[in-house]
Amino acid sequence: MDNVLLDIRDLHCFFGGLHAVNGVSLTIRRDTIQAVIGPNGAGKTTLFNLIAGTISPHKGDVFFKGRKITRRKPHTIAGLGIARTFQTTRLFPEMTVLENVMMGRHIRTRSGFLAGLLNLPYTWKEDRLAEEQSFLILTELGLAGYALEIAANLSFGRQRMVEFARTLAMEPSLLLLDEPAAGLNIYETKELADLILKIRRRGITCLIVEHDMSLVMNISDSVAVLDQGQKIAEGTPREIQRNPEVLRIYLGYDHA
Image 1 (cartoon, rainbow, N blue to C red):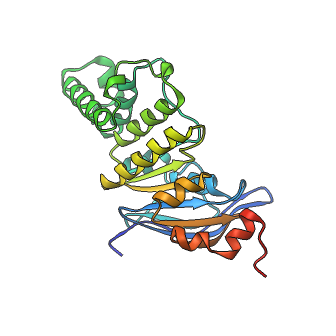
Image 2: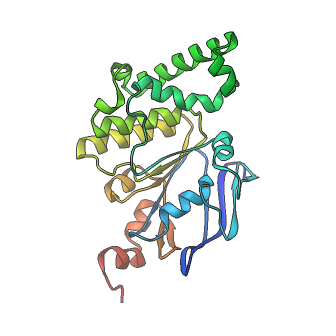
Image 3: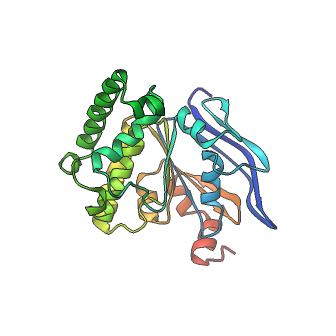
């Protein structure tokens, strides 16, 4: 089991009378792209929030690198190596692209808030190193030319890429991507697919929730399908495309 990065065991989550996540188990292996799909209200984003610690499950556990992370604080989970993006970009609009990416480095710095506020000498080296590493990430993603641009001035697609750069600055082992193609055009979605594959080649495992089936089927190693909070299917993209229950849910086909 050394190649298992994230192990989700029998998760349950209720919102009032709604069983949003109902007994979901999922094993995510290192250096893979795992997709989670399903119709609206299937429990996909709730599952992400349970992993990231934004909400706590009513039953079940999540293990990351063999360590139980259930009910830990989001910042603690992030520090262990889980980063995420959201359905809408969450950049600091008045800061430059480089400054936004540098924000992701702060989780890996040793200087506290007070030391930074007082601008103590030993914080200068960390700041310079964070700037250099952030610029290298922007260069790798083809965004170096935008480093000094104000984030708010970029197109939505470019802002999405900057958000990816910021998460990479956190040095994650697992990246949670919540509908990363939302709002992107065809060209930007192709760039996104190339970027996710590049991230996987860096040794970062990706767990992606997405409605764009073309993107999912082209880049995923494995796909899990949720419906009404339950996992109803799991397999390779080709297996999922042929699964009669998945076809029924998405296309209304009656296998019988």
